[in-house]
Length: 91
Image 1 (cartoon, rainbow, N blue to C red):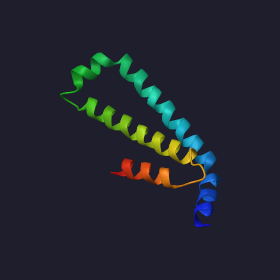
Image 2 (spheres, one colour):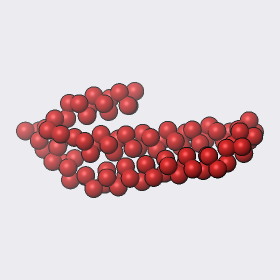
Image 3 (tube, rainbow, N blue to C red):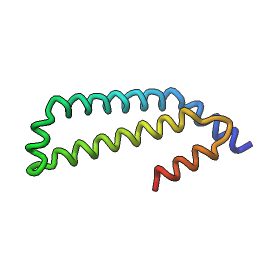
């Protein structure tokens, strides 16, 4: 009974997670385009400014955002698998 109430709450947030996942996947694609256009500058400036580590951190954050959105959108009748996946991602 509690589980069905939680699933109903997550289903009410479906549109939010759909938008969140769409934005995250779009930005991941834009990061790939930006990096591929300016690869030589990133390689040259990586020692001085830390451009590579910043791009890596941004990419990782968007991948986590996309992962959470996909997990919450893929909830079925049970919260157990989603809880396990979230626990692993949280660690």
